Amino acid sequence: MTHVIGRPDSRGLLSITAPFFISLGLFLFSIFIPPLGILSPIPLYYSLVARGQKIGLLTIASCSVAILALTGEKDALFFLVFCGLMAVVLAESFKRRASLRSAIGAATLAPLIVSAIIALAVNIFSDAGILKALDNGASEAIAAVTQSYKDAGADPQLVEWVERNSDMLKNVVGRIFFGMTAVSLLFAVIINCLIIKILSLKFGWGIHFTDNSLANFKTPDYLVWPVIAGGVFVLLIGGAWATAGINLLLITGAIYLIQGIAIIHHFLLRSNLPIILKAIGYFLLFSQPPLLLAVCCLGFADVWANFRKIGAENG
Image 1 (cartoon, helix red, strand yellow):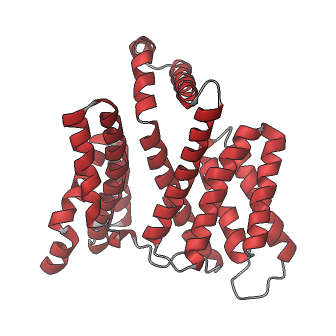
Image 2 (tube, helix red, strand yellow):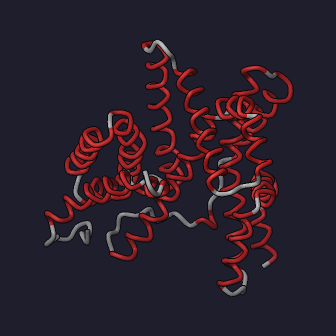
Image 3 (cartoon, rainbow, N blue to C red):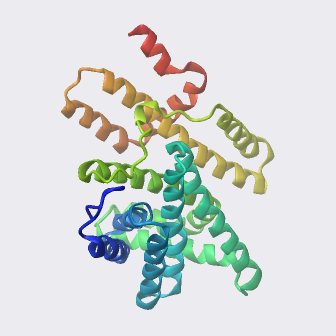
């Protein structure tokens, strides 16, 4: 795929068929290496932007049909909603010259809304209902985690604790399912945008968003209100509202985590530290959950403090 927008492409057939095989391959091989599935939208996005909407949609449909034939309707629907729709929304955002922040928000919300509609339909027309499906999924996930701990030779006390508290863990997974799905989608979209930029710059495709400097990322000020609402739901109201509040806090917390990372990235770019020290700093940051929580709080405090402006004035 070496096509550049606005230039003739001598590899027309290859640039049309390659996105199909690459996206399909990434999705299918995610059975063995799960992170590969996250990258499936990238070839679809290329096809939509570089080859046109008709070719792009045909590529998405062809991949969905192939997955339907190979692994079944559930995987095909998952690919269509989460990979295909994400690619379509990102491509349309690029063509409309939307900001990267708007594109990421739309590409995260669209699959969430469609999946919620599908879940509602399942709940109405299925005998078991969506809650039963979530319960079964949580049970399978906990069983898989327990087995992976055993296979990895984990501390027997940890394995015993997981097995003993499986019902409690299943309840927790069910309560935060929506929030964790939204957060996973958000980071999947960000990863796709990052890799699209890297590939676009390397091969000269010209299909990446140009306003995507992490150091300049800032959340809208009104996002503070969902945080406040989530805290009120959890601390003061309880019940189903507390579940909604937990999910709100998860989603907004992930966004403020990104803002906190942007602040750190801003100051690291301005520093004279060697690249190796910056890399070590990021490794320590992402490997320590307490540090991630602190960075999330830093991002939230930036709503009032505006740390990057203070740093610029001091500089």
